[in-house]
Amino acid sequence: MLDKDSAIGVFDSGIGGLTVLHRIIEELPSENTVYLGDTARSPYGTKSVDTVLRYSFENSQFLVDKGVKLVVVACNTSTAIALEPLRNNLGIPVVGVIAPGVRRAIASTKNKRVGVIGTEATIQSGAYTHALKAAQASIEVYSRACPLFVPLVEEGWTDNEVVEMTVRAYLESLKQSGIDTLILGCTHYPLLKKSIRKFLGSGVRLVDSAEETAKEVKEMLHGASLARKSGKARHGFFVTDAPDRFIKVGRRFLGERVESAVRIER
Image (cartoon, rainbow, N blue to C red; front, top):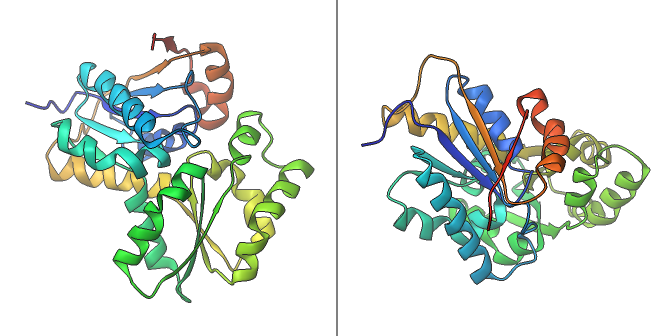
């Protein structure tokens, strides 16, 4: 039996999933959470399908062993590759970050031209394209892998000349395509919203999958009568490497809530 007081489990290949956790805490301030950042094996975006599957199952099992009532796959690469296998095997609810963002993009676009940016593995998987086309066949999808965005964010570079040059290099073709909606298909990318919006202009709606995922988590917990409606929340953080760096970079995502992190062996 799942318990209302049990935590929501969240995992990511590293630190970017904290954007999802941040939104979950905003939507569900009384919920306990457990976050696992697989920092020793990050990034997942350049790994093989088999490797991402194995890592995703290991991370999920860690959270299940912690007694969580729901697992959030706060990694676009893991969601693209491992979401359905996880749902078929874990025995508890599992939420990914792709479908919520796709639904928001479909609702937002007026000219039916949607851009998607993400890691190499996410873009190569075609998960966003398939999901967008399945929802509305007339949608035109323009995708672009932006592998340098993640290290820029983790370095704390979110709004300088280097970022502006990188954004221009990656997004020029998308801008020329006439998209009116852009899905930020990596959990690090919301920290680059300012620079991305500055380049693309106010006519392009940015879809932050973290916001939409948090709403889905809320709906799922309430629908299953598993929401914790009151009480002081506890937030635990686990990493597979370099807790000090996680705390330092994590505070850019989540502020002072990231007080400490426990390293686990992989």
